Length: 202
Image (cartoon, rainbow, N blue to C red; front, side, top):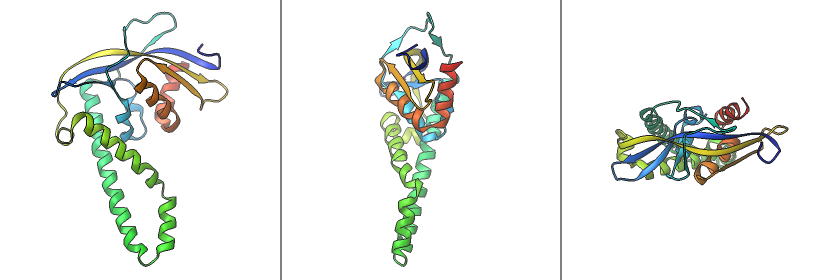
């Protein structure tokens, strides 16, 4: 048990180590990506190639098997990019339309914009687009994601969930990008929250 506050588990999480046409390498999650509630958040499951561990389980370590192929992972990321672009374009059209209406009814429309939850998610969409274009490039995302090679590697992560307050979680891993992603997704994405709890608690 990690830290003594709840259910703890040492996980070996599968990732695809991919090499792109430009020789850059990244890790793609091979287990949790499909569980995410919001497609745009899949971009958070791309990590720098660090913190690799052996794929051998020992003690109370739990080895997770890949839940989908590398091509399926690439397909989900491309789908997330197109989804985010479409939603962002729709947001822009919606705001422009409201701006025109605000010329006649400024106060009412301003209040509506302030309370619109879509505005909160706009920066999330922009962030996802920025990450995916930075890794793969816009042209590849609009057409097809090609890689030079891929292999399965494992990242070790210690995860502890507070038994009395399931909203509290601790994550530690030598891959710091994975740690930050897990902490944020656990609090903000119900699909990831459920999937991670199932892995740790069963």
